[in-house]
Length: 345
DNA sequence: CAAACGTGGCT
DNA sequence: TAGCCAAGTTT
Image (cartoon, rainbow, N blue to C red; front, side, top):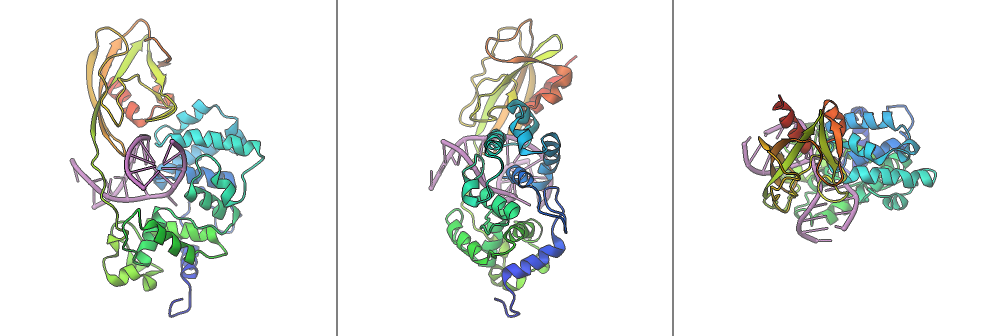
């Protein structure tokens, strides 16, 4: 309790009632709670992904597959293609798997523990769906909450070790009622006021009780362990063209860009360079290279092209070049395709 | 538990 | 610009 007798959650919910962001997956003021399907969909898309990036994907997915039953019945390859560009593609595979489990059992479970068992739902997402869609009291801890709590209570222990103390404090300030609004309020506060850099303490509804602010320089919290250096990798991708079509493959389900349609390549990965061996003999033309930065490696991908009469051995498909935008290529290969197209006659 | 796993925006 | 950061999960 502060001097004026209001708890942190009371202050925060009061602020949220006036300043909540208007987001497509959120209940509009005065309207009923959004369907669990939409809450789940948005939470999965928002994992490590910005609101701005998610919005168009959320609109596309909910328009194409308006219910969990519709998504459960969808062709997995079509869902993977629709996810192209959003990143972390195991999310899309788990999305389909989860939709099928949920449809088979006749709807989403309404407890945090049961939600946690579904594919793609970890501690954060299970708590968020339980609180936001089902009104359960659940302690929702994401990167926003970590930052707000670390500052509010001046938790000095660096992450990831400091997460235990952060969770304990988050548990203590989570209200019994409106836990879903409280969670979203914490995230809105973290996204708009208690930002990673240059926090707007003058606008913060919790400034009065913020120990980090009292100590000065709240932006230094939470302290984080130093990051490892990012290796440089080199690989090759191959643009094989025949009669207005290009040869595309589907990558293995696990690993980098798993399950995604792609240009054939030389086996590069985050751990090793490619072997630069083309999948087919012939007169290859050097088109140049594209750069792409992943979370844990930076890649220079050299792109080579070949006018062929037949495709390489193995799995693959001829894709009409005029429809390459519909192939659902992840961004790395979309860049490579763009390079190839720009150099075509 | 540390590492793998995308992408785009901002400073 | 090179690095940091974003509503984490899985292995």
